[in-house]
Length: 82
Image (cartoon, rainbow, N blue to C red):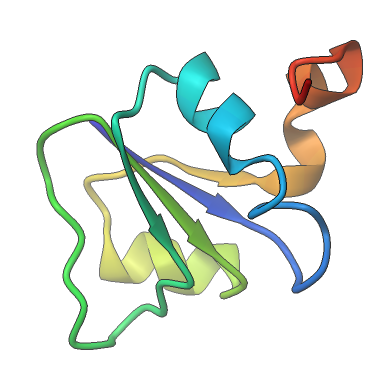
């Protein structure tokens, strides 16, 4: 499954990408994806996609993938980013 995590630049998406990928069992990470760009995201396979794009724009571009806001990933506050 592909999971998209959206948040503003500098919020910690890239810094915490390994912890996020582990939590969701993702083996591939795409960082800096922009909806509508030439870079396509896979529909299958455990992929974590990080973006600073608006979550609604992400949902329109990739309706097959859940879009989570970085600020809502409460497991990171519990120390998963070690």
